[in-house]
Image 1 (cartoon, rainbow, N blue to C red):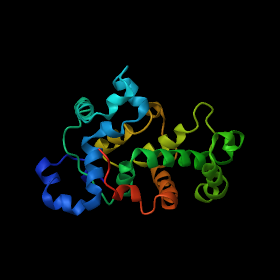
Image 2: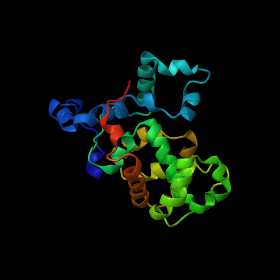
Image 3: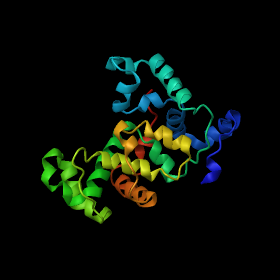
Amino acid sequence: MPELAAPVPREEALGAARLREEGALWPWIARFLWAPALDLHPSRRALLTPGWPEEAWRGPASLRHLSRHLLLDAGLTDVPRWHSGATAFRLALLPAEPLAVLARRMALALAGNGWAAREGELDEAETHFLAERAPLYWQDAAPLAADDPLLAGWSALRTALAGQPEAIRRRFAWKTPQECDAAAPGTAAEALLALSQRILRESEEPWSSLFASPVH
């Protein structure tokens, strides 16, 4: 939706009426837009702050500083337009834990029977998903990647956001592994977004993680 791509004045984006309209989603929207360090993927942390101890990533002051650094360095200081009713935008808001589960299950569905030789790497729930649910969700299984097959799930989620404004896509990229930056899109974004919804309806309906206040 091109009309969402242009930045809007901060006072317009953050007016009281807009905040009331967003309701329970607002804490997650604010976290996603202005506190990206809170959900920065571990593979990116080491590159951003080499040698930092893990406990440094739990300090509020450090996280605020790192969030400002990320946004300034990426030129993302303007308030972007967003549409909280858009499925892809809500997908981008998902917290780290359910997002990681979704990425794994996307990878399982996309490769299908290609996982047969590596089922020992899966837990019981994933084995059940692969056998019972994945064939219903996705019929065009691709060959399993030899190096890190789970990256396919993360790459698919990034592709699913292809229709979102660049400012949203770039923030979401920070929540995914660094290795995904070089991945080339394959399957159409619409198909991958639809797959993500099928999986989420089973485990996150009605996306309950987004209606609980995030812990800062």
